[in-house]
Image 1 (cartoon, one colour):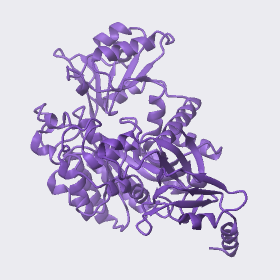
Image 2: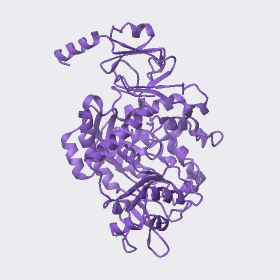
Image 3: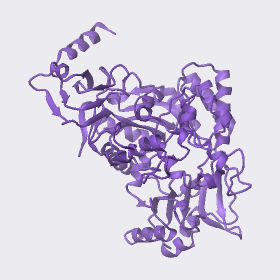
Image 4: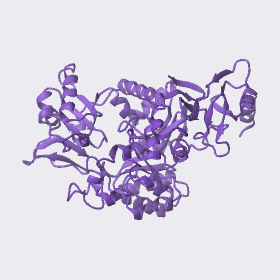
Length: 546
């Protein structure tokens, strides 16, 4: 530290606090001071955590005093696997989450079509055939009859499949003669004609003719998504796969001071994009810690719900199908080697046990070629694991980044996909924690709701909001509440190389915290999801108030 910087720091430390929080139940997530009753904030960072006496000692005549009347404070919650632009788009498209039948999907799209311009693409997201009485994939005919003149593109809840109508297939030139692309497939009827359901790589065949959103639309979507996240108590996310256009919008908004979120961005990678960002080098704590760009995202397989997750053995309900590998193993290794040499982190989506094993194998090969001690490579989701591969995460220092709410959304149909014995390796949080790794928690929003308490509750109970099943789904895999809190605070900070800046309410770290109206660490399990956010604070400033 230069003399000038040291003098500047000393001057700041001598200033009165900007904010003092009093009369609170504060969970710091810091083992050295787990709970406190007050804290003080100066220049966007925590200046003191402890007693009311200590916090008030830093107050001056202009210090804001915030009496929380016994409410509960936690460090700012971080969603360790999210899609910010996906949420922004979902907030502005036809909402299909929770639809109970294909007829309901068609009705919602038809209603939107009444106000659509001629030829305008109609987008929707959130359908899940597993929630319908008929759990087979739909076919486009009913949708095409209801909306014949506007192309329709409806993304499945997991983002790994889509349903399109006849107009969209026509514009994309998809016919019965169109071959399945690498890493994807068109679901076809008995005659070989495409039904309109696109799995993984097949989405791109139609997606290429869907008009890209303008920069203005991306800005609007980003701002709407950030406001929605702040409303749920989120101060940070790990943004799982963003292209250069999205990153440019983030950069512009952050430069303008309109970015009330700390975003750890994973670059969506092709070689030209990687070349550009690696030449630029790691970008850390831009715009007062709003943007961090030092990681890369790849996708190894599809999703379990659409039977695209790559499995070691065939699907129990689809014999002969073992899922899809969407990125070849040699590509994963080559990007891993480049990342290790450039000091970047690599995070690979892998859901099925075959995909997880493949990624671990390629990580191991890359690390033999380029030995790095503190690489913190991640596997995103790590949903289905063979028991032989569970200890390999710790052996290779790989972080399993998992989403609690996926377990409670998927548990109803996972045994049908996998059979009962393989289901024991699904969402295996306790088995992984027992090996010594950490598990940063998230939602995969907009696949799941942004509400972080859904994943907290899932980690603790392995039950849905109605308490099903009694005792929890494979209850031996539950975590403690303390671990669940770490999974949303400390462990995401570590997984993003941000542990010196965030994750705990500790003097010197960012003053990011959330206030709840009840104590989720002590209430009965069935009360956890009734808690609501009173206030979200980023850098000492409220970005949401109820």
